[in-house]
Length: 221
Image 1 (cartoon, rainbow, N blue to C red):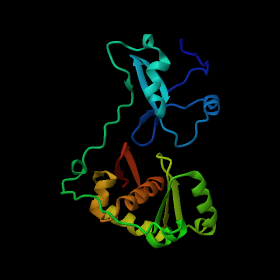
Image 2: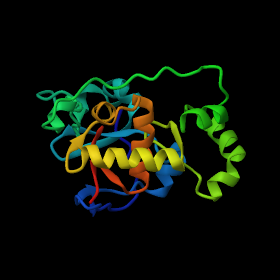
Image 3: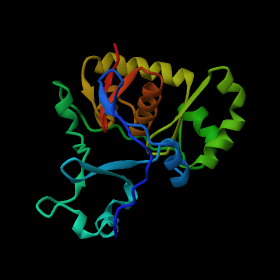
């Protein structure tokens, strides 16, 4: 199977963000024809020196068959061009000892709104649930009493402003100046893993911290 040349014109890398990483824009025609949306997960794949492909993450196992073996570098296995190492153990990002993440059993019988009121945060798995909850919380969202964001994992993280501000302060006090993972933060601030994840996702959206690499965060300022 020969590769299909798209004819989208020259594309240039540009520096993005404070770290100055290189980024590239996906042409609108490809966005539309492939149904690419904000938050979709893709990976660059190195075929050979100077030749890269962009592949939807769930299609990676099928890529060798889709390309045909003759297009692969036989001396080097097909691999992600953006090699993101698995996050190191939490202890690698702090000089202090790190305990295990905090467990916090929840009442499974609560509705989403009751859950938000009871625990201060809510994690929704799909867009339909998020739209329903957002509609019910429309007034509170407009008043800034409830904050929410869609993560790159396609989950929706919603927090009450009161819960967010108090936990944000705890994260700042415990982890200022260090790189950390969500499990490490959970142990340090003594909050459940899910609660910490919700706070970290909203903090990232609010510009309070940056994700230095996959799963590793650092506070801003």
